Image 1 (cartoon, rainbow, N blue to C red):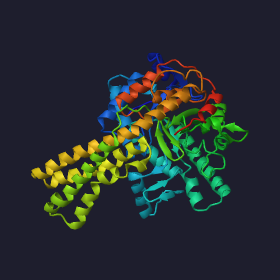
Image 2: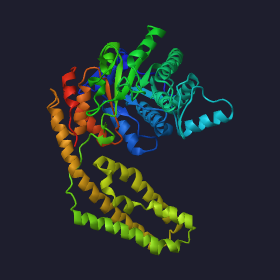
Image 3: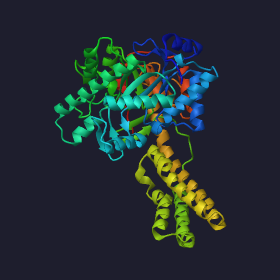
Length: 504
């Protein structure tokens, strides 16, 4: 078990050791944290690249880690515990130098199974929000107590620095779908938050957490949004409980395209979210700094490697080659496998490269195309390969077909990517130009991801920008940006200009 927690003296010592970077106080806690934190949304224990990246970040100047019980179904917390324990054994870092934040609220995977088991035994978690099949949400004290115990075990810690309610607005979304009157739903929502806060104060008293807060995607929403979470209301709840409460941290999305936290007046008294957070002295963590939504489109705020776009004739030839290879499989290879008809059909459905490629233009953007390829095409195709290799390991005809199909599919996917990349690179250049003209200290060289982080870290009221640094190169990209001197200013006028950024 890793003893201790982040301390003022420990984080100051860490900051002094990495004096080439800039550190800020986390709210009024006295803790010094790096301007970029290691976001653990897509990392998990057992993946060496993730372990190396976290190891590198912690030893090079990043001393805030943000994870959650539901990230990788608990595997993210396990990764954090494993790496911290290793670095402490090696005396490369001390527990009191690192701020570890985790979150609670989601029931997915093993948590969902636990909930279902409790229901069957007649002990369901109270105030459970049954959102959809396989997904529920809960912030009731019974659930918080259970989950904190599990999180501490995975993290190998006796004390967690920050513990956040993770998107509690799921209740409001559920209530809206159920047709519950908004005023009634909001009253119940804040009752649940108060109940959670009272329990978290008890956890502070027990020494299991140091402070708590909320991570909400709807903090920056408009005040009339049915799922809007009002920071002013939550602050009043905390203040009414105890003037020495431990509500010290909030987290929400903000980036070059989603500027609402600064530019929208959604709080009582004609104030913005960030203005209220500063007034209350809260630590502010920003998530999704590089994944921006422009309407319903997702845009990755990062540079794109320049590629010579494939011409239309060659692109058509490559797509045709994939379709012909799949036809060859259906006509000459599949019949010889002797599979039941339904299994054969399922296997064919996994070989979907030709189907996707023939409608490649409907995916509209480079980033959507990349997502389809990485999360849909290749996972299905690899499952088909795995089945074929296991069921016909000695069949050279099948092995030859797999090698050939992989080659023509890769070539066709890369050809489409090159076409999408041309427009995407032009868009990246346009965004850079508009951002650099919006404010002082922003007109510097660097990648789009660095510029996106710079805009946030130089804005008064923001403590730490959470970046998914799953690989060493992502860590290095962010560290390079953090080493650049930059002044922290209010920058309200500059953010107003960002709000008008044009995206083709």
